[in-house]
Length: 339
Image (cartoon, rainbow, N blue to C red; front, side):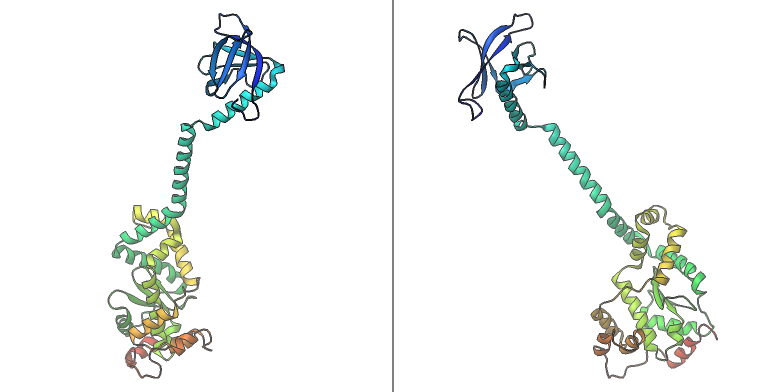
């Protein structure tokens, strides 16, 4: 039997040379199960070559010349008319080569896989991880500083904060009522957003919220909504998500953000739609604060169609609650931006 199933026996003639100084001899070449047997014309075995160690000296050329792997001095030349034997040997060499281990190739594949994982990590994991880390390590003082810098940029468009004497104390009372000592309220005379929040736990209110509604629970509703958004997502994280990895790296390494980053985020705050809040979450905030949700719902949508859940599930529907702010404070607060 031969190493190839389609052949019971395969022989050919050839020229064999034992070493470079020896004369070439006419031989018979037999393809066996694991060896190539070379005999003289009288049937005497001259040598056996392992099929796994057969190499070709002139790939693609004729006549084909083979030699044992590692010993190019011993050669076997097969003439052009022995194409079937040449093809059989080449087939076996290809099969054996495929079955051999390729440590270099495996090493390359492992390195390529590691490199791909590193690239994927850099693209998809690293930015989020770095931004999250920066959010955690920035101290409260720096957050307040960033919030003040943003407020300065916002007031260039929305106007300087309203500070009518006598009304600031009323505003402080409202802030203490809903934010405690951890945050503060600022009323702006203009701007497109009705409310927004900044790093440092500052909530911005448009003057419309204290001037256009007689019910202070509307103002309280907008404060509660912004406070709920702050609790759901750190304001600094929101800022860093906006400026991206370069901004986060700059803040982490230098402690500052570029003017371009601050300007861009300030513009976004004043123009972007507020982040949605699940009705259940918002209703819980109203329940905890002791405020009706219905006035806020109708302030958002005068028809009540899009805020029906806040109206029907008002935690204090039909109940009379203490005012969220003293009447005298509310009157003063409505004049915080002057005439």
